[in-house]
Length: 280
Ligand code: NAP
Image (cartoon, rainbow, N blue to C red; front, side, top):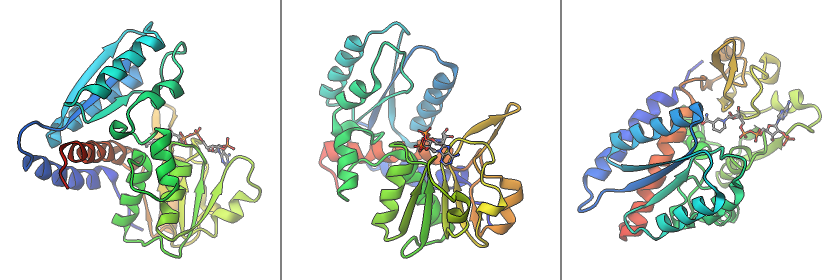
């Protein structure tokens, strides 16, 4: 059993990103982070992103808007950021207050500044197997599998969860790596049986400790994406304590996928900067 910490891998990647930004001449890469309202979880996520930017030499422009901001006001801010040549990436912290349609906002971000990889153009390019900004959590999962030393090529991979944020894009990335991918969801029959045959299991359903030992094949590689709170403590979708000894490698929660998501946001912002500055 090998516990692979995203918190450690993200330090390694951030070190490389920092070295890279140190070579940039002139202006620094810049990420605009827009926070509407004061939801405590969102405030804390934005704080984490701001801090991570500073660690690798990215300027973070944090814009705080009041809870009652209208969709029109937010759209006009995004238009301004789209046109600002010193802004490389734009991130609007979700969820948004109910008077604002998230889809309209995400679609208004320039695909060239869409460092979250959620714009339909980038999602479309991913599904066509083209170069694009890919969503951060799925990209982080690929890095974690790489760190585990497992090549998805020819492996039987089961992804449980089919959201646009995690399940679908990670399945597509794994298909690009020649894995044989099954995507499961809440209507899947015989989930236990399907999961128990997986060489690689990606658990992304948001149900605390759902994947017990019977779901896990001996020697499987397990990525636990879920973030759940039980009795005030964070835990994943995998019953970590009872499963870990069965796995070849597994990610914990916390300190697993979460830190990698932020790190891939930084990587995407640097990618956007290089694109805008005409660097390779
Ligand atoms: P989501 O949009 O709610 O999607 C959940 C998916 O799980 C859906 O496809 C749903 O199926 C499926 N599902 C739910 N219950 C199931 C069950 N009993 N059996 C099989 N499938 C089931 O969630 P998400 O945004 O993908 O996130 C999933 C989890 O990852 C959450 O805990 C979230 O907090 C976490 N997350 C973590 C990070 C990170 O950086 N660490 C980032 C993103 C998300 P249907 O489609 O049939 O409803």
